Figure 1: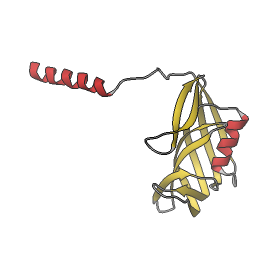
Figure 2 (figure 1 turned 135 degrees about the vertical axis):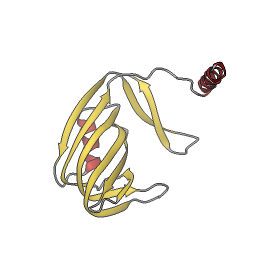
Figure 3 (figure 1 turned 180 degrees about the horizontal axis):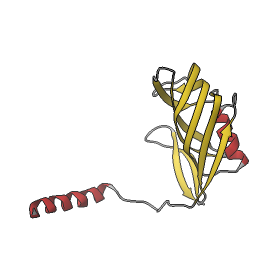
Length: 160
């Protein structure tokens, strides 16, 4: 028993060598709810909402609804793919900023339950509804800066 406890403690100590928390990033938050109507562009509507409310560090909490057209960029692809039909929104996640734009991932399923997902692009139109809850971390600011390691603009988190 003593041997197992020693191994467990050594494992936790070695884990701390890899995990070094940076500056504390906790923040108070404000929650918004919105409903999109048929025909509205999902991504464009979210970014318009962010600009209207001057959101600086927003995240999608949840989204339920449906699309009649989805425009997604699949992993490791240069161009987006347009899907026409009736789709349930299975998941929408992302971070966004009034001026910097957003990074969203969307998963949708068709009438047979086949599911696809990728980067949400403009040109994804609501079919019946999109009921969305958005959270803003009111003491933080999300910015996108070039990252030498990934080659993309990646999320940087700042205190306000």
